[in-house]
Length: 161
Image (cartoon, rainbow, N blue to C red):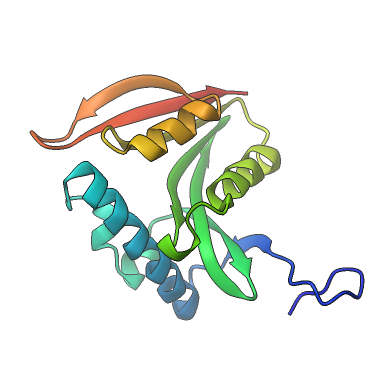
């Protein structure tokens, strides 16, 4: 248990996830799959690539992962790739048991503060109203919409810093 000022207060924290560690990759999948199942329900398509991830695919995706932990339990995570002066967010996930606690906002703020680059990019399902609203609220601009198939389209967002 993390303590703050000798009080019996559990301090949440964000730290890098060593995805090469199998247990960490399993913990991440245990957050990612339920999180993306909720998105799949919202957008009406289960053809979301992260729903097909395995420990192996996570360990070989070349993304950097940061996790939000409470009491040493992973509750949410964000993954990025940094290319030149851009941060590309590949995943921003929160376990459904921890929805509406501000965890996604904390993770997004963490990336914005840690990587002070020119641009942050992210995409989400066009029908995922909560995510679209979240990115709009955080100053992201809708760059374009891409049709994946008849049922699925994604919105590409960008935020200039």
